[in-house]
Image 1 (cartoon, one colour):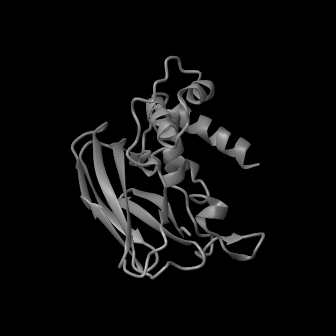
Image 2 (cartoon, helix red, strand yellow; image 1 turned 135 degrees about the horizontal axis):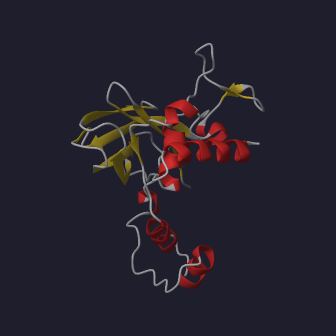
Image 3 (cartoon, rainbow, N blue to C red; image 1 turned 30 degrees about the horizontal axis):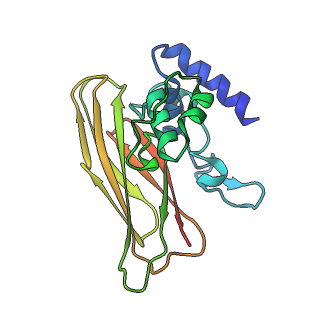
Length: 222
């Protein structure tokens, strides 16, 4: 039932912001979602009766009213998705079949599939050799100001203590609505070999009025 619910909410946001792209609407719904119930406790996954993770609830439960005013959005164009498909090894004929776009050449590729301007992060660390001290993953993102005029946002990170996260710049100053600013985020695993299970966290940009939150999942390769 999540599909019809989200489709209706996307139409609701689109009615208020007819110039927003589908990815901007998706970003607004994701980054304003909540992860606690009405008692202030973490939402529980019904199947396991344990605290829900981004793998079970995604970004969380949508808040339609907050989604109308998310402050910032991660906007992504069709060309960005084409570049993403090309960067994961999809051939031009396959991309053309998926997108119905003519003359696909795959001349443009993302430096990493993780650089797609998506409002969440999937961080996959490699297993570390005995001589290595850490495993590092770096992603890039761009935020668009859809709030009122000048606004300054500061980044904060929550998650496992054995994963170091650095956001640069950690402060974004937007001068007007429509401004776009970029940042990079570097994730460093400091646990030898990584844990057996996945780990999770959040990256939030806040300006005192808006909290633009992105879920992060961490996994370790073989």
